[in-house]
Structures are given as C-alpha cells and as structure tokens.
Image (cartoon, rainbow, N blue to C red; front, side, top):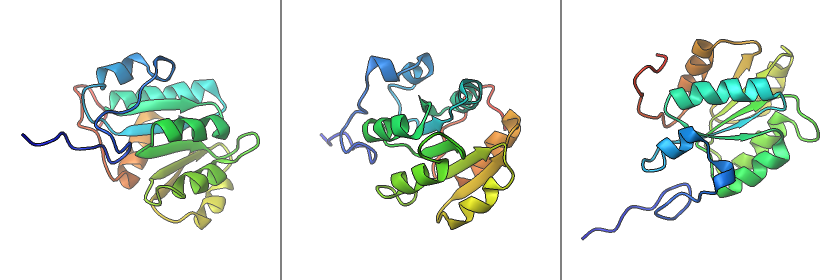
Length: 161
C-alpha cells in the first residue's frame, strides 16, 4: 500500500494544528488540503473582512495582528499566500514578505494599503506580488489573489467568481 503523500508545506502527513490557531472555517478544511492564507493587518476589521472572504473562497486562513505574530504562525503553518498590510508597527508588510520569502521564494504576496505611495515600495519585491488599495470590495480582493496565487482552493458553493 502506498504511503500518504507528505505535505509540501510541513513535510509531514498532517498539518500541525493547535486549538488557538484554528477557526470554524479551518476545522471544516482539516481533512482536506486547502491552501493556507496568512492574513496580517493591525486593523481588526480589515483582517476579519479579508479572512472571511478568503474562507468563503475555500482557503484555510491564519490571522496575525502584526509581522512578529505572522512570522511565528508561518513557522507552524507555512502559507501558500500572504495578504499583508503595508504599514504596520515595527515591521512593514514589505519586510515581512521579504522574511517569509527567505524560506519560500515563490510565496505569492498581496500588499494592501490606504496609502497609494505604498505601491511604489513593493516594486523591489520579486515574485508574484500585487497591490490593492484600501478600501476594497470582496470581488477586487478575489481578483487580485487570483492573479498571483499558484494554488487556488476548490471553489465552494456560493464563492465569489
């Protein structure tokens, strides 16, 4: 009998899980191989909105209020996508993307910001990178992610196309 394939993300047959890092949406995806999105924003409303949209699209989502927490989450749950605010305390979204790409140079990154000049700063980032100006609607978020993501989840019923 063939062995269960190992996850490219964790190197094991199962994703590491802790009760504190899971949401109901993640529990629904626990038995499948839904790609992981890491959402980082110091504004709770924006973080929840992005996470809700991604979960409805079939992503398994991890949330962090800042880059330091995001780096810790990324060690336990290596992401398939990073959606991050540009301007955050201590470590910027660009610096976070650069750090995460040290271990996964192909990580797709969506930078979001209310500052239009932030788009210029992301030009130094290599790889699949996009910028979305705040405020945005769900459809714009989905379109931006679709343009950069290597791996998209299977679309659940009711997903935004």
